[in-house]
Length: 343
Ligand code: F6P
Image (cartoon, rainbow, N blue to C red; front, side, top):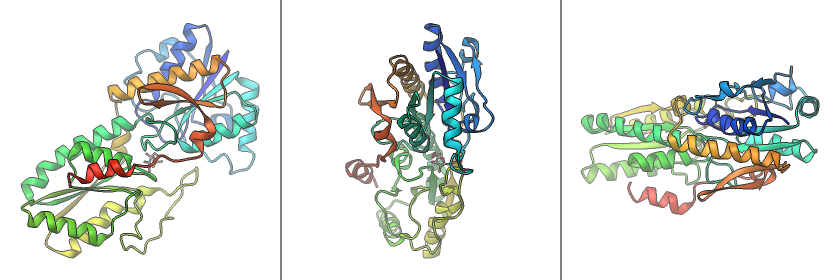
């Protein structure tokens, strides 16, 4: 079989481990692995597939990024991109494994609904794909946030400052909440449980009056600015696949400026940005990326197209792409309440 693989959307630590997990299983059984460069662009534009070798996949389990390259490519503009992908799969591949987040899995589902032999793999460090407990990249991002809070703690405590830390997280607050929990945040502000600016300041004042001279506040980049009293609209600029580039909204700076304006606090802001997606994946990401990559291979050889390996508890299960593509997993109230217990 000629099994194609692509990575689409933002890169994430663990992508290479997943490609390796898929590829080494395929090689073991005598199949070919075709690497498609730069996500959907490599099928909708000039076909970019090339045969990968066992040697190329050796030694990449701990490498960040993706050896295939990735892109945020809008298949609907110019029109006909999706049909060109269908044609390219038909002409060049016996199966395609699409590793990516919600946008990627929606396209994978669309293709599968039209009979294309497509299997997904869940990747987004936002960790918000519906139907899976884990997405490639999340654990590394959380570890980086936690370590950053440990490091920011020293300046916060020494200078008695309020440190605002802005994390990634497009529509959900998983990275902020779990990174904040692991790093001992004094307040976590996420889209699922909005706070007003008054509530944030009130919390800081209360902490200060109970002899907590400093505070570390984690804010997810996707929080609603209007709830915080901003007149700035959320639609600032768009990416290839049609989302707001959230980092440009400057929510960390916004919250810091408002606290500063209240008076009585010395405030600093750190935007963690792409540091959360960079570098080597954690062992946890390597293990689960390998497992879902290998499970994608199993699905392909079993002809289970239109499916995606997901993590449920400690197991990898297969779920329909339609389930993962059409929903979003939010931070549940009980988990946020646990975080809040330490504020
Ligand atoms: O969707 C994953 C993500 O890392 C988001 O958390 C973030 O908003 C976005 O990608 C950033 O994308 P880019 O690298 O294209 O700026």
